[in-house]
Length: 128
Length: 136
Image (cartoon, rainbow over all chains, first blue to last red; front, top):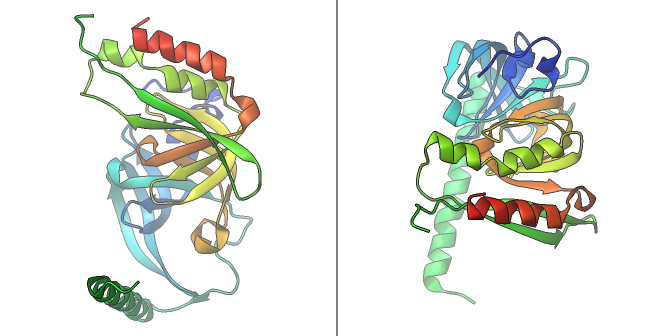
């Protein structure tokens, strides 16, 4: 990977233009990590400073602080630059504590499992 | 031919979208075995093709079903994509993407790149593909 000069930074696909910016990194497992980009490499491995995980369940959200994070590139879906001048989240969403959001997460997971098992039972009975 | 056949199968299809515009989709079907450097250099067709599309408005659909519309800023040999002026297609489902205007998308997670039909010259694409399949 050759180093891009200052003019080429905007046109090249390197992450250099994101350095020291506040970013949101979407991971393959559905997690959303926020943080400041410290460094990167050709595999899109990324080091985030002051990282936090933004957990969103319905209308509730919570930022769980994580500290310094090294993310392996193969898990990265997307790296987005958060625009400071815009709201990061819609106004109707409420911020809750970590315990609250973990409870909400578990409730959502249980509901999904219940729906899944009910559907399996229906399929077994083969209703038309 | 007597040479190992490493074909990149590609398909070009036109399909209607909900907004009544038909868009042209170009997507990968399959790759065969891992290749050497010389063979990789011969397979730069999509890289060269996307370089021509820089500045156009495209929609990138990821494997996790997230679809992002934006202006193609750049592309690299891994088909990583940089978009600017991005808008998520189904914004309500992805509230965390509200303030994202520029993004970098890893090539390995792209399912489709939806293109504007007028940005595509089918004949040139066909010729390039035939040349590539023949091995130049």
